[in-house]
Structures are given as C-alpha cells and as structure tokens.
Length: 352
Image 1 (cartoon, helix red, strand yellow):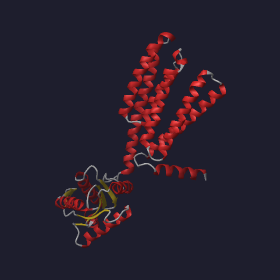
Image 2 (image 1 turned 90 degrees about the vertical axis):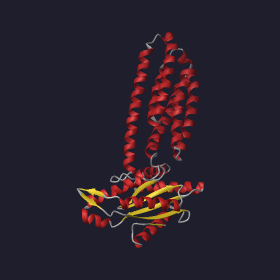
Image 3 (image 1 turned 45 degrees about the horizontal axis):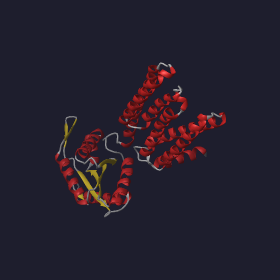
Image 4 (image 1 turned 60 degrees about the vertical axis):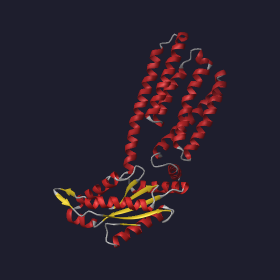
C-alpha cells in the first residue's frame, strides 16, 4: 500500500512537469528533501548542544533557509522547475558567504565554512547549466582567494592548499555535472524520439499537442494539425520487403524534417502514419505547406539495394483549432477524417 501511494505521488508530481523536466524535477526534489533534512538536524544539534553565540547566529539563518527551501519545493511541486532550481541554488550559494562574512568565529580564524563553497558549486553542477555553473564557480573561487589571502596572516595556515582542495572538488563537480547532464539528455532524447525515423514519438506528440492547444486558446492564435499516411504501404512491403518499407518511412520522415519550421513538431504516429503539429498556422497555410511536401515526395525516387522504388506518395488530412475541435482527441479525429477523404478520392492529395 505504501509503495502504491509513493508511485501515485511521483506520478502526479511528474505530470506537473514537461517531459524534458520530469527527471530533473525528481532529482531536484530529492536534493531539496536532503537539504531540508540536513538543515533541520543542524538546528536541532545547535539547540540541544547550546552553541552559545554561534547558535544565535546560525539558527535564524538556517530557519530562513528552511523557509526559502520550502518555497522552492512548493514551486517544484506545481511544475515551476527552472525557478525552483535557481531558488535552491542561490540560497545554497548565499548561505556560506553570509557565514564567511558575518560569523565572528570565521573572522577569528575558523575557515571551515569556506569548505561549504565547494559544496555549493557541486549543488549548482547538478541543477544549473554548464555556462551558469562555470560563471558561478569562477566568481566564487575569486572570492575564496580574496578571503583566504586577507585572513591567512591571522591563522598562519597554508591557504593555497585549502584553495586547491576547494578548486579540485569544484572542477570534479562541474565535470560530473556536465557528463551526467549529457547522459540525461541522451536518455530523454531516446524517450521522445522514434527509433527508426528520428521523428518525435506518439507520447511526445500527445503532450506537445495538449500544451500547444492550451497556448493557442489562451493567446487566441492559430494551430493546425496535419495527419499523413503513406499510400499503398502494404504493397511496398510486399513487393520490396519490410526493410525497404522501413527505409521508405525514413525517406518520408526526412522530407518532414527538412521542410518544416523549427516551431513545428513532426511525429511518427504509428505504423506508416505521421502527424505534424503546426503552431500559429491557419488551415489554409497548413494545406499549402502540406501540398508542397506532398509534391516533393511524389516527385522523388528512392533506391534500395540497387532497386529504384518509384511511385512513393502520401495523403494528407488537415484540421485546425478551433474550427475542427478544441481538444487533442477532436483535432486528431478531424484530421483523420480528412485523411480518409484523401484516400477515398484517390490518394496522393491533401484534404481539409
């Protein structure tokens, strides 16, 4: 039962985020929970151990951090990943420097809080982009050098060694964060792309279309959905083989990739069916663009294993918001009906 509740909670949490942010949001939530736990335990230790003046300094500081962290957790819960990540990172960057600059014990030679600067860089390496992380690390390292130089004469410590340790841990953190982020991007790309054609998959199409419908209705802008289907695809498979049929799908997908705007979303819907999501595009504009793609495909020949596959054509069906519906299901159904009309009328045409 507890496992089921945990699964439902995570599913609801993920549903508040876009497909790109789901994994990062979960990572952020785990870090936030860990930081919150550390802060609470530290306050309890300071309270029961009676740290004197340091308790008076640190308990209010950590209480403020808990409030900020709780706010960032709430933002993460409602789907504001970027704001929550920056809010968490900035609070963890500022906290060590408040200690370094204002704690009387640090001014008297206790330089342990400087080590937390390295931890803040490690945290940023998980949450922020490489560029932001490098800028933050450079600024923090310059500040650390300044502090260590000005206070080393009072402590008699070998400050270059301490700085080298902080710098080393920061570089390792940045490198790890970069590699980890690239791996997550590859995993994300695999989860939203069709492995054969490289187009977006059906899952990504459904989420994107829902988001674009909401945006179009909110801003009162156009949105067109184009459904396409390869004509006589079964005959191609039967004549040339299924491997050739797969290459035909790749061949057509390349036309979609090369002849759509960066704002358009080209997806493989399933089998030999494709869907194009065209934001800020009227039905008339979508029809014109679909006709252009149809013509290019019909005029192009494709070779496979020294055989020329001619006569590859594709039929289209067009639907638009709000004329043909206001939901994903209604728009796809309308586009599908228009596609069926193209098939009935002889294929290799665009219907709306």
